[in-house]
Length: 474
Image 1 (cartoon, helix red, strand yellow):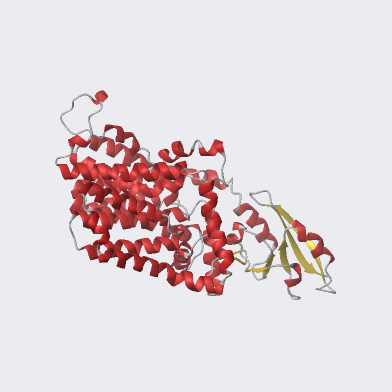
Image 2 (cartoon, one colour):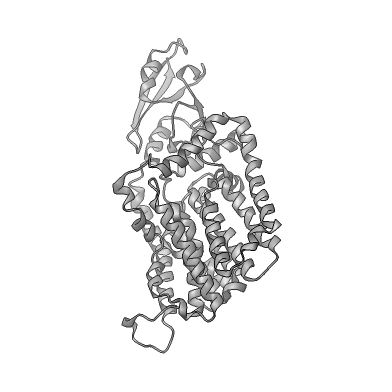
């Protein structure tokens, strides 16, 4: 496989790892919060204000929802595979950027190895196959870093070096907000510190790039705030940030394990880091770049993971400088040989890299397809949806009364309409869902007289929350 053109090799490895059984696992975790707003956008035509359960969703910007909606529109199918394909394509985009944009800086071997490290670490493997913001967020941050670092290394025009990366950063704001700037500038500052090129920060292109970034975010944020309650939006955004930083969301037992769990995301390649020797690089410039990247990895990683409300995934954007560092280290053979390998004539690292990549491909080609049927019997969301689908004909409209967040609606066969109260269920309705606090109101209601509501199904979701299905008949 090493004889293949690097882009083709990267695509083969990516396809083997990320595509098998991609749509065979039901949605889990926060995936429903990304998918349901996309479905609502397609049904309502409102692409500015994301909605979950019929209510505006203020916590995250909508880029991930837009991509999922576009996938549903392009493939004309709404299922797990079409929901997750934007995430895996984002992961591929970074790998392709390594073997194309960064090739002039890293060389053929270095850029290929950087792409393979990116594709096969546990962090990217876990997040890249889910409908989660992390895959999009770390990919956009990664593209910004790759373009900036490549063009800085190649001494390209500052206008190119600053403006293009800030386009990706602007999109990153639309994915998760401005926090990716912390990781981007960690690389920029470390590189300029080691190269003593601080004046680049004052180049007009830098400020134009910032304006471009802010303009991309403002193109959505301004109409969003105009269409919603501005005070509530800013309160929600600020409370999320403050809660993470000040310790409002803090559990010592979780916090003390944050760094070990975050380090696990960098396996198996993290095992090679102790073998890296900066003195093995060929020239002083490579040594300074490697030293800068180590600082750009270690400082954000430590600061983020020591925050009281941090989660291990928050430090995943340092995966890009980590992959770049290992790529250039492989190309320069900057690793010392482990003693247990003896003194073979041939370089040892191609065998280690082949093992790591092979294991990741085996997990994709064999592990996920084997696991999918096993997890099918443990479905917590789809099984509840199947019970409701069996009771509600596809031709009927299903009204969901103040449902809160319910990912099972993604699997509904009947069209779903959200209402706030039982009184809003129309006279000609037949089926509606309520939570227990509205159950008695539904039973006593005379608004459909001479018909009345009767309970036909009572189910509990994966969070042990109860839903009650009513039918309105004689």
